[in-house]
Length: 352
Image (cartoon, rainbow, N blue to C red; front, side, top):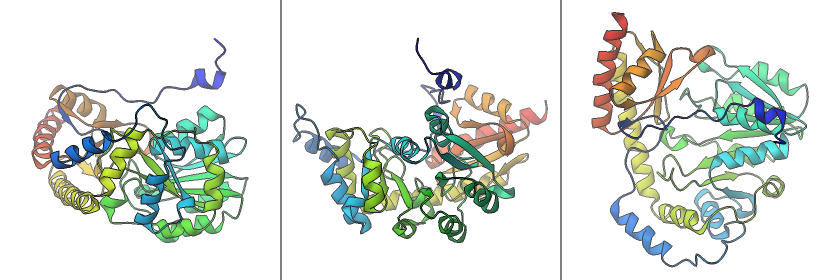
């Protein structure tokens, strides 16, 4: 096989699906869209021509997103999931240049940089998962490329201050593209879109989280029309199917529902965090996202025991995440089940 050595050396994206159990491992909304919206979606899908290619750049969807955010439509890019946009950004601004990410962070930034042969610089976060601004600025002085910052941060759930983002943007000039990945912003009540008025900044968004369309795979970027024109060259033609566009347009008709469900998750997140604080040998980290990171005495063993009991959470490994697990915020019933099982697991692990 004529496979590049760099690809052979890469480990695949690490995710092991589990068919049954309380599913709290992928930061999804815990409940599907209401039946009334499902009927509306079916009706919309029934009106599209499946024998025709979709619009080249999903023009109608881009227009709706532009209206939602008060953004120029020429500065909106839509792709099948924001992971595709991450790949496009590395292709456009990272290959033969550099990719800088704080560590720990969303693993796809690192994966795409390595896969595409960009020089990767992972800068360790400061205590409490703070953004290592000074260290990142020093790295930026050494070249040009793209900087990825998840805000709210993933997998840690904290929110980086605007002033720190502004410091990085001020140093970017025309040498760096600064990507602010706002996948979880609805749960935090945060919005850094104003910063994307800078021609070197991209705000990355998704319909997988608060919109509840993880299965549809729709992501988008908001940036300057000039930068969008260049990034669009890296997106495959006709990339977003008519089915994906129909699902997105249906949910965009119901913004009140999207925001209401995000607020419900935020309330449930805070309730879950307070309950976790009451458990011995469990250290949860404050979160503004729809998940909570927690550290235990023996994270890998706790993860195995929870799986055995039918509770599926995400294991985090290495460095600052040693012995950590990440749990998505579920329904109250799911969260109670998780807490009950975790309480027993912690007692067992503590007793050897």
